[in-house]
Image 1 (tube, rainbow, N blue to C red):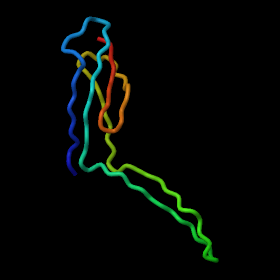
Image 2: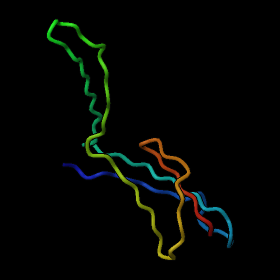
Image 3: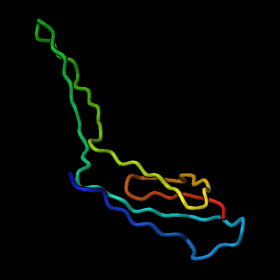
Image 4: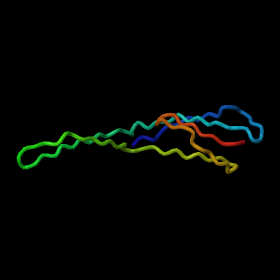
Length: 89
């Protein structure tokens, strides 16, 4: 399995105490795939249900954000390839 890749950037290079810090993370994993399962149920007389589907992600990604001062980072958004986290300087 290939390793995930990530890049990260902050919205500024320095902050005043109490200022909002925004961290943007671009990430991907070439092994992550979506899987769709479709089910049809048939009875003894040959009657069939309508097809129903469900999806799953194989090898999902998890993001963990920490810094060396112990501040809390809160996820603002995450669309599966770009995540934004917020903290207070």
